[in-house]
Length: 513
Image (cartoon, rainbow, N blue to C red):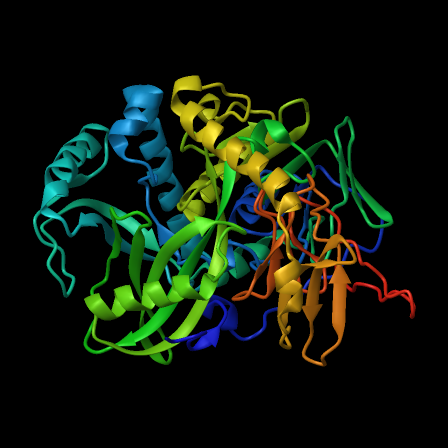
């Protein structure tokens, strides 16, 4: 048992503080409003500004505080799904386009990194490997297919890792970065000269144009185009949200004996594991990630870290655990992201559903959306259109995802939490329980004060669950997340959890962006 090992939080976010950006404090008019300060939003913002557009980036928390800054820093052109399925679902030309777009995204990151100081960019080989002999032939065929689809790829029967690997698909010229330093280099170029970056700015409403209006508190930003770079659209957009599922993935930073190879590696297990090396001023780390599960559907998330630790100790000479964290990804039903015009809107563009390749797909999305926002056609954009219909490719996952959401919308309301209410609640712990015949979400803070909230997610009515690792309330339906006292952490909801006041005293207020 290693309950909560090492430092809790992303090692990338532990850098010395950078310059902060203000909260939106006035009405504004620009050419393009971008909601979201991760790799997608800032890539689009920089390319648009370079193209002569005035942009405003609105970030709910701080730049890099979301999935980008909590990723593992992998850059690979290979999507999560096997290539034979990609070809089956989208045809050989479609699959070739996906891989080409991914490789071009890595090239773009390299180009941007070259002009932004040391952001930890390195070209490395990528390996999709197996430890099981019965999967070697499948990887051999996938390697041949990868080469036929245009990647510099081939099959190898060994990988420079300290454990036996009978076979792997090796892809050349993949990449890795320090995602926070990379975002910092981008945001410094975006802000200024008629363009803006605003942090701690919660977008509450997006109105299609012309002109588009983005409402954030008492202020409004007008623009010809809006880009939602938020992984899943804000508010209700069931045409996309019904085809994406939120998942949590875990990462550990470990000290190990010896020198680690410079590579990216991920296995064929389910759930899968991913590996890379990190070097900084204090030395060398091994990053091990994986043990993914549906958001809000793991009663003991720390056990996932323990499983990850066991995996790492079995495969590497681990000396210590230095860092541990998790991040949320959104997987689309057919395996490709949604990039383009938001269904039912003329001037609102969206990007999301990147699965586990968010840095690559996010960069690709930023490039495509910046092209569309300037009124140009983006080559291959129809492949990623949010309005696409691929019944054979998506039918099974679409049905599974929506049955899962429907089950939680009903079952979580019917479930009794009477026994949970009898258990003591420790400081910094939360739980959904029954109180006077109704479900409530209760959090006891470090001062022993209780915060009683409605457990109903304001997005679509799902019942949140307590994440005891990250100390958040997570919605299992569409991935909305909230801080322990109820303030919004990440969309698609745009509101806090409702406070249930103590009738004997005034209701506390939630402080949040």
